[in-house]
Length: 282
Ligand code: U2P
Image (cartoon, rainbow, N blue to C red; front, side, top):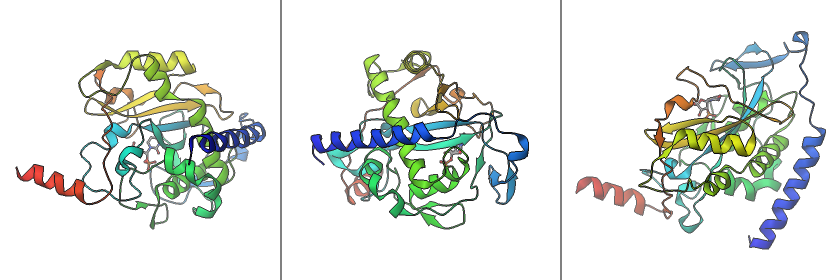
């Protein structure tokens, strides 16, 4: 896409998303009696009835960390796009969470249908890439795309706020564009670097000041891997729940000083695998 068609596309996307958000359900508390029809699981195991989720978490991934040490390239891997490799936080998913740190997953709903999101495809390719070449397992034992996994595992649990696949992806993209973490961090001097270490507290404070929410941050060693932004069911910002449970994202997984590794632009093809093997042999 050219830059101007890109801009026009994003504008259209934002207008459509604003319309959807304006008509999304209010997120007012739902009576317990209304909640027992949602079929889902908590942390694995299909078939239990679940109550409605409490809040949304927009989970974002840092490509510099995700692509570090990548062993295999393929066309669909976001790490392997040469000069087009993402240079910004990208979307992992819009998760539905409970205030106690657990979450429902794999709720009742239709399986992922790529045709439903065809109008959003270029935005998904660009801002919601997979960082792996393997197919991801879905809720029903099959294997498919990263988008299919996120829709089936999390999107199906977003009722009664989000009712269908198209709106799950549209609303997620819209939140992502409206809460630009990469821009906020860059403006505060937190730029990608393989040598700098930044205070985690400074990074959290920058996001708090910009968005009026406390994020959750997840690290691999000292590298930021994910940042989560949380929202009430009416999409107003709120603090993420900081869990002590290891299963759940927590800023505690990061040390006091963290890095935002530079993003390597890998080319698609076997050359990456071969060069890593060569390095290991030397
Ligand atoms: O943290 C590891 C994986 O657990 C799932 N997760 C985590 C926190 C949360 O609030 N909700 C949630 O679903 C994520 O699984 P995925 O979507 O990747 O399958 C997360 O990666």
